[in-house]
Length: 245
Image (cartoon, rainbow, N blue to C red; front, side, top):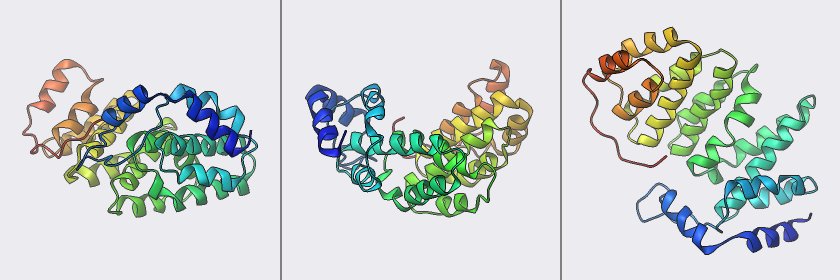
């Protein structure tokens, strides 16, 4: 399927009702984190169902989607990159090209679902056995979304039993002003705890008193009730600017 036909198919499947739901869900109002984002009105399973139709799209086509004003087109482009990255397991040159495209276009990876559906499966998978200094570059960015990419990329490491970068970045973002980062870090900490509860508790022992309450609650979700209460009884930080996840 060529790009014009794909776009026509997307628009035929879109509904105004779903677009309105998405605008509310992704906080697109004035001053919100997704301010001004535009939605066609498609659900994620609909986009995933179209993935097999994207194999003939050129790199230029995929970048056109990725830089679209429409949220669902950007998400579809990221799903395409993830699919191509995974299928190029033994083709390092292709994977490296996808990583270069990904990092060069983070401006358009500008909401939490776009980050979460791509960072672990593309950047994290690439960095698993490579130098990870790019995570520090992303973490030092002024972009909330690049910072979230850094944290979510570590999910690939967690699945491989490697927790160091997750813990390091979570400590770095203890004073972050936005709870979308608190939720991202807390989620990854929870994933660490599911695999190594001792590693999580050692980290919490030294950080829980300074940890934003949202991050802490996310991190504690799988721990025993008494343990949760013990950590929650430590003095919390002031509330952050609220987001939605």
